[in-house]
Image 1 (tube, rainbow, N blue to C red):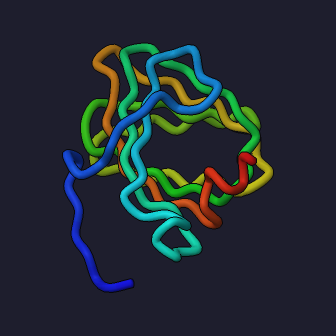
Image 2: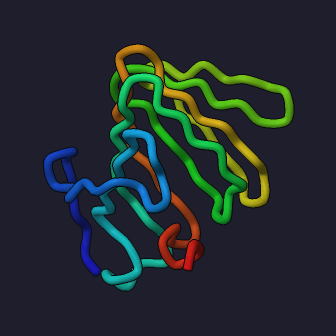
Length: 116
């Protein structure tokens, strides 16, 4: 693997597995590249919601719009520039704001491998 740079348009966005809401993800680096992590982008439709027990350590950076992330009775409102860490094993609910959101993420290990 070599050093690379990415933009949102580099990601092949697809509906997040098992989700009914308008939530899409697109990896730009993952285990297919020989990497132990996933790096990618997310697109959240207005009001989209996801509740999940984290199978990986996930760091999410809000690029546009906004999200609320709730876990263990605490809610973090994340606007552009905010970084949210969601540790493996923690249940979180992520809710997109009225304008939806675009995010970037890094997970360890690769989130697709952890889901299978």
